[in-house]
Amino acid sequence: MESIRSSLERFMKNKDWRHRYDKLKQEVLSYPRIKEFFEEHPEWTQKELEPYLMKLFEYKRERQNCDVCPGLTECPNMMQGYQPDLKTEKGQPLVTYHPCRLKRQADERRRQQALIRSMYIPKEILEATFDDIEQDHASRLSASNQCLKFALQAQPGEDANGLYLYGKFGVGKTYMMGAIANELAERDIQTMMVYVPDFFREMKQALSDGSVQEKIDNVKNVSVLILDDIGAETTSAWVRDDVLGVILQYRLMEKLPTLYTSNYDYEELETHLSYSQKGGIEQLKAKRIMERIKHLTIPVFIDGKNRREM
Ligand code: ADP
Ligand code: MG
Image (tube, rainbow, N blue to C red; front, top):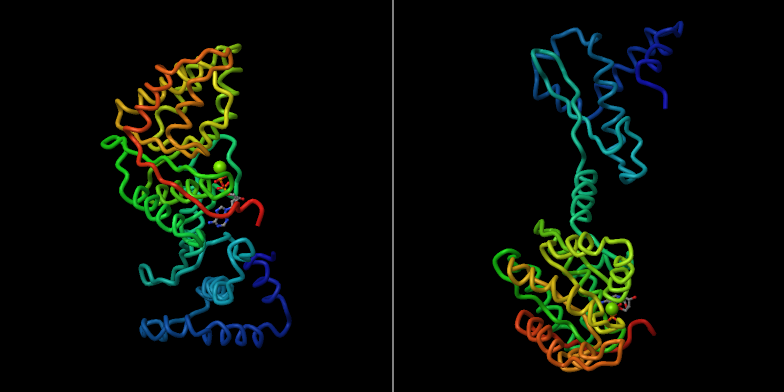
């Protein structure tokens, strides 16, 4: 893009520059926003405008781009997303820049997105919002109301109560959690969404490189933790007691809410957790974990069509 200075210089070199100069001046002064500025500052109409013409020209060119805004990514202004203002300071016109509405919105969105951390969760889920949730089934309506209520009222650090979303594969449980995470981000509350089967697999691998503690710490401290698809993993007694158990114990003490999605209801999950890979049945330990989950969540059932087949 040609700089304002060079275009003005090129213009001044021209032999009939006086004529062109007057034309430019006329153009600048007839730009409605500049006209308005002069109407608000009648003292300016008396002054010699030559020294300020370049500034006014810059203002006009940049502000005109905003008048026909093509969107932030296509913004042709010198500084993308910045809109000029025309002011007067110490008796001189001054052009300053402020981030435009679209830039402010994009910055805010980026800041909020940074509040949502995730492990192995698809991008479309991380962008879900309550506005996108179709209320095509009575249980989905009541579930989304409960989820929205949680997102609007959660007080991490003061109240550890969360939700336990369960129902068949594909009814939109994980999607609903994505909407919660985004709503929480609007309240500046940090969430972490973890796909449990992959997380537990990673923890088992962490045993060999000594990073177990660090990985647990990463997850246990987050304001709102979403454990997605609990029950779909192959459990081992170690993961159940020394990973899940430790995380939940910490969060209980710190009053940090945990949310779950599962294809299982409470009872089925307890059964699942009581079988370990080694073939032993450890009902007591499974019961202990389940008591903790039940005590700190409201069960929310979602029914409906399998959306993955739509
Ligand atoms: P679940 O976790 O219950 O197995 P998902 O949340 O993964 O189901 O949803 C299955 C699919 O349907 C995903 O591709 C998801 O993006 C989509 N989906 C779920 N709920 C909605 C919704 N309310 N509106 C639009 N798409 C949805
Ligand atoms: Mg899911």
